[in-house]
Image (cartoon, rainbow, N blue to C red):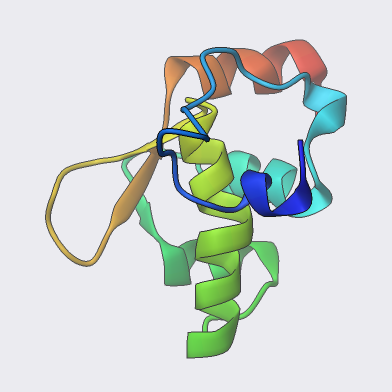
Length: 104
């Protein structure tokens, strides 16, 4: 798999992953985002940026969205709460299991 395939949205040549990555395969930012989403309810990209220390400016939010949150969504570890804007992210059952199995 090339680097660009890990950040591009699913398409004919890049289908969504059907299995979650192992906990040790996550980046530190992906793990931090999952841990931030463990609370009740959902969080916007800006919320996650502030919680993880990533920042909540436009550039930081764009990077967080594309490099961290979209790959987690494609892996089935997080999901959008609904189709409304701003996007509100929630941890899925698979994400909760991964955190539980992989420890913190």
